[in-house]
Length: 620
Image (cartoon, rainbow, N blue to C red; front, top):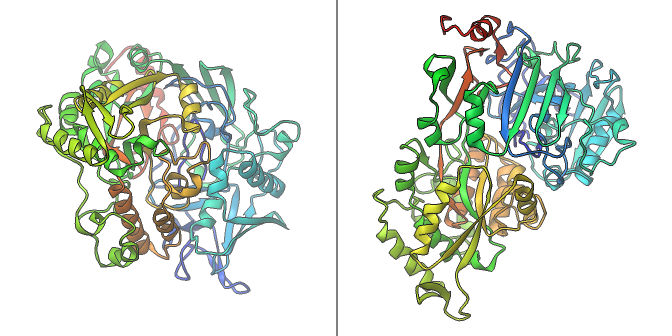
């Protein structure tokens, strides 16, 4: 499973015969299932008669105007294609067949579709569309729109969709507002849920427009918001629809409470923070430990007009890392990649730059039960043993641990170990420069970064340590559009990469690490991994018949990826750092896997009145 993300909007298996649908029924003619909701494993948490999710306030007031910020720019309102940089929060304007809950590993409930059904062998899935489902112009969403959406996304959309929906072989209008998706052979158990997360787009809108072109014309949607104002590259705002067709559906109760949401774009995050403290916008998520510790000061914070909170979560943190582009000859030798990873001094970085706020990441599935630890257990060994000799022997013998230093900044031991690996890989120091023993070519590479971010201060010490080995690192800062274009085309040597994970990994792993995605422009296989063993382990994850098998396969894949030394693992945080002006209400219960903004928050009229009056007497 994969979640929504910007600037590209990735929208998003069921188990064996033991799979249960709460409130569902056995379809006697097919021996399958039919119901209002579906879980990846077991039964969904919410029954057929549920009225709202537990992590919302169903009585939350509607209203208010909220301003947020993003760093960078945008030049497109089409988040489904590779071209352009899409504006943030466009997902508010579109709907999917089903909606996921944020307090379950992977469950979905009816949205555009009121019902889902499929046979016991999971060879297809059929959805029944709600009669009341409407586009923003008031016309009905049709099966024809559903069929068009799949075709457009997989043939003209971002290449991700071709990989993610590759197992769908046909889609058919069954009449009576029912649409059936048929799958290719195999054991991809999450396909019914994946199709449920298909973004539905209006066929009639694109009858006179080219789908694959960037545009600043809002695409007609069916969501709770529509685009209201566009200032290209500078700002975009959304307005809530009072006549939104889905307002009464259980998955939407207590959500979509804010009347208008405006996003202002800043080229520099430091400037954005100062704008926040001056109340140029209202809510901010902070990703930089130093800024969180030192920069949130000033009269508004001292007066209690700004809240600064850390919201714990159980969300898998995935992998944050310096990623090697293994398409480059320089990084095709595993020993070279391992050597460079040894040079990164995490302990010094965490102590001096992050105030000790972070935890070192040592798994591609960190902060979850999917992460490997210790040595492989019996089930993992049974899965990994056939690959012995094709994967690193350490997978079987050694627990993966990132290199550690004493934090003094004098990591001589790591530098010596790195130097030894580089010599074994055919590199030698000549006149203070590391050169290849045979070709004489210098060891020099470019670290690509997005300007306006905070990572340069982290990369600079890494580069200085590499220089002690004779390696030349050129740090290249580019704007948002150029950065996206270069990463889409894999035109980089090394960069910071974030690989988010869910509690239910599946098809998206093909796009992250699969061989087929390595040469597909715009894929998430930034590293360029091409390994048949990894491909097979991905398919094992996708075909996992139950939760236990999914965990085993994920841990096995994790070990193989870690010992491939494809990245320099960085760090993670197990809470959301959020600052906001004292004008909001939020539910007493926060979802396990989401902070809920803006979906479940609301503007509190009393708090807003106090804030606008400059008072600080309201109880929190």
